[in-house]
Length: 146
Image (cartoon, rainbow, N blue to C red; front, side, top):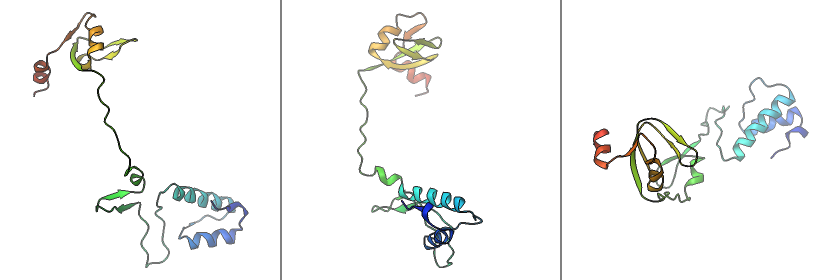
């Protein structure tokens, strides 16, 4: 990271010009240092800055690019290209239950009025409560128009 605070206003303006950074109407050293510091911090975090370009022959930089497969990505999306995401496997089989009202039970969880999908262990506990019953898969499917 550059040490902008030790630079003079002329050096700061020169740095901005070399890096195609438009300082606009900034005049004081503290304003310029603040602006340059924030832009440098963003670029260090792998973000590509769109800046006002003074030369008409250059295009502004873009945060999008094409990867090797021709897919348009962003700079931040590249951080996840080699990561593997594992689908979380359900813990136990699930059951559909129907509740006549919203219910919260501190040791079991919450269910809403209507159809709810819960684990078999939770269903055993919920089915002990009044106004809650097991729902068949065909009942749930017909409710949702399937």
